[in-house]
Length: 118
Image 1 (tube, rainbow, N blue to C red):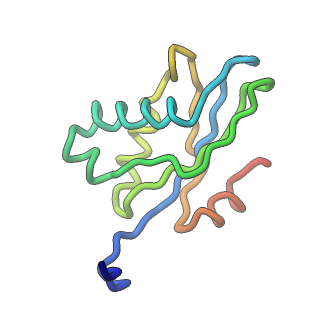
Image 2: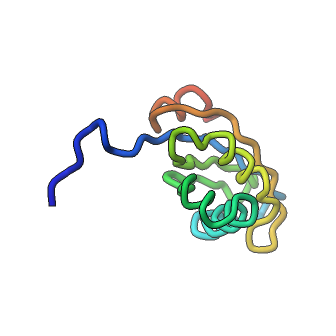
């Protein structure tokens, strides 16, 4: 199967999201991805969630301090709707989580370099 020409390929934006919980709580990437999909589906509906196509690309979480970061991939043009869906996540596996979208960028590297605390 051939690759699509560059002008037809989907374009992406990357949200850098910071996570905070109580110390010694655990949040995993798969659980966060699942909650992100549920939040997108509940807020945007099935068609809107499919248009946004929220997916976690990178995930780091420190269990001892209860802080972490994630890079969430979203289709270009769906930035505002994706931010709203991310803001709807309040807990992951019954663990209360504070979430903040720290920035948005066109590449993963730029998102991490511009907006990361680490």
